[in-house]
Image 1 (spheres, rainbow, N blue to C red):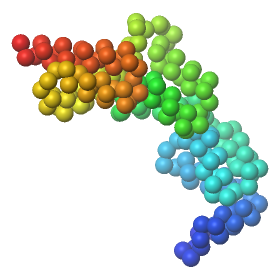
Image 2 (cartoon, rainbow, N blue to C red; image 1 turned 60 degrees about the vertical axis):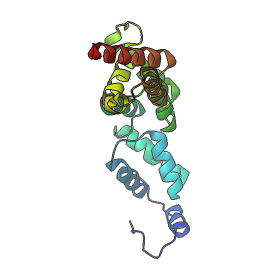
Image 3 (tube, one colour; image 1 turned 180 degrees about the vertical axis):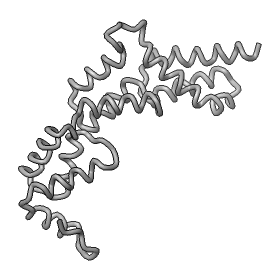
Image 4 (cartoon, rainbow, N blue to C red; image 1 turned 120 degrees about the vertical axis):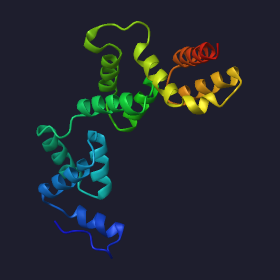
Length: 188
């Protein structure tokens, strides 16, 4: 495959890629896109389409990568949710929005979030997973929230932080109230 010349414009590059007839070239481009991290099928389709490859070659590359197990929206979504739960806690609302932006089918997202709520098929008490994630997020931001002296304003800031991160109102209320109660217990 010819590499992009430094004097080639974006339009010239798209034109060159539109003239490609070799499916292996498109498959290589898709594989390079997947090198950094796993991607959803829609992300790969968008990327190759914007690059200028012909739609039939793009679909062929996606089909081949799916056969090889390199593209799997369910596995991608599961890894995304696990990563978020581990590193940057988010509520179900935010997770749904992020996965939708990544192009993961709504039915797959519903299934993944049901699994998240009830791992192993056991129904959780209340909304335990989101509440636990909210607690972790508040713990991570504990120092900045502790600088707000007025407990009412601190609770409002905690609620706003949780709401911005996709937690539902009930979870925001409960986690913020727990944080204030814990801070009051520490003062006594």
